[in-house]
Amino acid sequence: MDCNEARPLLDANADHELTPPQSRDVQRHIETCDACRRESEMVRAMKGAVRSATYHRAPDDLRARIMAALPPADFAEPEERARERIGRSEPRARQRKGWLDWLRLPQGQGGGFGSLAGAGAGGAHVGAAWRGGLALALCALVAAGIAVSLHRTGEPLPLVDELVASHVRAQLSGHDIDVVSSDQHTVKPWFNGKLDYAPPVEDLAASGFPLAGGRLDYVGHRRVAVLTYRHAKHVIDVYVFPEDDRSAGKPGPALVRDGYSVARWRDDGMMWWAVTDAAPESLGALQAALTARLHGADPGTPYSGS
Ligand SMILES: [Zn+2]
Image (cartoon, rainbow, N blue to C red; front, side):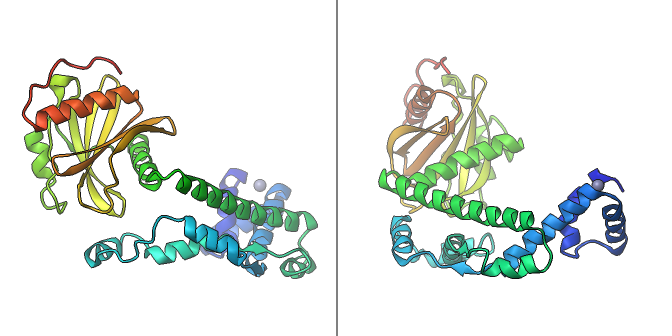
C-alpha cells in the first residue's frame, strides 16, 4: 500500500471502520511512512478534540435574534405535507436545532483540550483541532449573519436560493430531465400520479423556446413540476406550483441571484418560477410567450436574443 492508497483510509482507520486486512495494510504503511503517520495522528487528535470539547451555549439574545430572523415559523404545516416530508428529510424542528448547535463554541485549551494534550498529542495537533472548531463556529456565525441580512430584504429568498440551487444541481449532474420530449402531450401525462396537481405544459418552439422535457424536483418542502426549455445555448427551468400552495412564493420583479436570472409570475391558477443562466430579458420573452399560449393568443414573433 502506498501513500495514495493509505490517505483516503486514515479517517475510517481511526474510526475502526476498515476490514481487518485493510486495517493491517494501513497500519503497516503508517509504520514505514512518517508523513502518513503524522497525518494519522492528526486525524486521531482532531477526533479526540471534537469528542472531548466542552461547549458554550450561544448567548440568549443572539439565539433570540437568529430565531426571530428565520422565516416565519410555519410549523403548523398541513398534516399531509408533514407526512410527505417525513421520510425524505429530518423534521424541520430538528434541522433547526441541529443548525443552532453549531453556534456552541469549544472552550479554551485549559478545558476540554487539556486531557488531549496530556495524552501525548502534539501541541500543533491541538492547535489545528482548535482552529478547525473555531472555523466551524465562524462559518456558523457568518451563515447566521447572512440569514439575518437576507431576511431584512423582505424577499422570499430561501425559495429563490432553493430554486437556483435546484437548477444548478440539475445542470451539474447532467440529469436535468426525467422525461425527454418536445411533445407537450407526452410530458403532461408523465406528471400524472407523481404530483397532486396537473401543471399546464406548453411547447413554445414557435416563440424560440422549444420544450425539451420535464422532471420532478423537491423544492419548498413539496414535489414540484419542472419544465425544461431550451433557448439558444441556454437551458431555462420553469417550476410550476399550485397558486394557493404556501410553498409557491409570490409574484414580484425579476431578480438575479448568483449570476442566474430568476422570474416569477402568476397565471392560469399556477405560480411560475423560471431560472436560467441566460439574460433576464429571455425570461420576460418566455413569460410573454407562455401567457399568450395559455390564453390562446398568437405566440407572436420568435424572440431571438439570449
Ligand atoms: Zn505514506
